[in-house]
Amino acid sequence: MIKICGITTLEDALEALAAGADILGFNFYPHSPRYISPTVCQAVVRAVREAHPWAILVGVFVNAPAAQVLDTLDTCGLDLAQLSGDEPPEILEQLGERAFKAFRPRSQDELESLLRVYPLRREGPAALVDAMKPGLYGGSGQMADWRAAAWLAQRAPILLAGGLTPENVAMAIAQVQPWGVDVASGVEAAPGRKDKIRLRAFVQQVRKAYVALSTINQGDEL
Image (cartoon, rainbow, N blue to C red):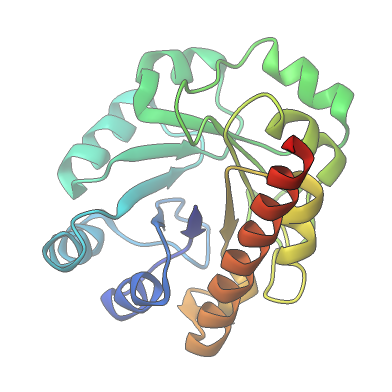
């Protein structure tokens, strides 16, 4: 699965899906350079649903109350919420299967501690593993802890984020073996605006990497 996050325009949404993305992310954190208002998102989603009804559409939230998250999901017509802030576990529990948590662990031990208090979504994506950079809630361009992510990927269908680009995503998939990958800054021409060439290159590298991974896993089973 491929998630293109930080979508701010209909043009970028349609380009991402045409390139082969499965999931789009819309960022509702006002301090993000990839922020999109609910009004604009609603219009984008309406057009996307007409052209690509199969797409999974995700709202990205930072420290928003559960009621606000639910209202935005319903108003914009989104499928899931990604909680990328410092939300207490109770918020995730209130949202149930409509939300998944973004973790930014600095080690496997720290990730294990987080999982003791934050519930995982039962289906993919169960969670997202991103890079830790103080003061930022994703979109930093820094790489996540692949060792910790690989440990969780063996146990749940996760999205891997954090500094992924067309140049390194194949290596990330080979090492982590995640359910899917998530990219924002790695395919941008500028914050909030996607680069068509890098979008397509990213998707191509992801598809090749998963084919190679499937071949290796099948060989191990023989």
